[in-house]
Image 1 (cartoon, rainbow, N blue to C red):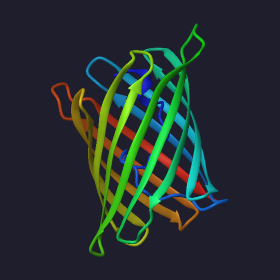
Image 2: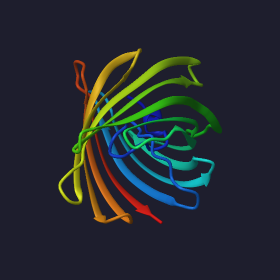
Image 3: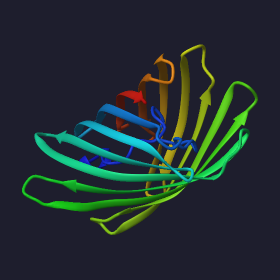
Length: 217
C-alpha cells in the first residue's frame, strides 16, 4: 500500500476496468471520488476530482487532481489522460487510452510518478450484460519498473436507474483483486452516484472502498 495508488485518472466508475465509450465533442463529465484503502499495516484516505471532455475526432481528454493521507503524511497528485475510439460498434468496440501522472510529497517537488497505456474492448452479451476487457502497460517512474496490467469486468443492464457490476483486475507483479460496484442514475444523463468495494486476493487481504459522484453536461 502507498499514497501513489490513488493517483490515476478515473476509469468507468465504479469499475477500475475502463469501457470503450468516448464523450462526444463538447460533452463533459465532472467526477468527484472519496476513497479509503486499508491493509494490515496502513490505511490511505483519498479524494479526487476529474474533468473530462470530448474534443472531437472520436477523442476525449481528462485532468484529475488527487489528495491522499496515510498515517499523517499528506500528498497531492495530478494526472492527464486521453482515450480514442479505434473501432466503434454497437455489439463490439475497441479503444485505446493512456495517462501520465505526477505526485507531490511534503518537502519534495512535483515529480513524474507513472505512465500508462491500455487497449480497451467492450462487447454486449444478449440484452442484459456487457463485458469490458483491458490489457495494458504501466511504468512506475520512481522505481523505473514496468508491469503488464489487465482487467475483466461484467456489467448488468440494471433495473431502471440502478445497475450492478463486478470485475477482476491485476498485473504481473502482484496478486489480482476483485471489485463489485453499484451505479445509480439519480437524474438520467445528468447526475450519477456510485459505490465500489474491492479486495485483493492475497494473505492480509487489503480492502478498498470508494464513493463517487458524476455530473454530465
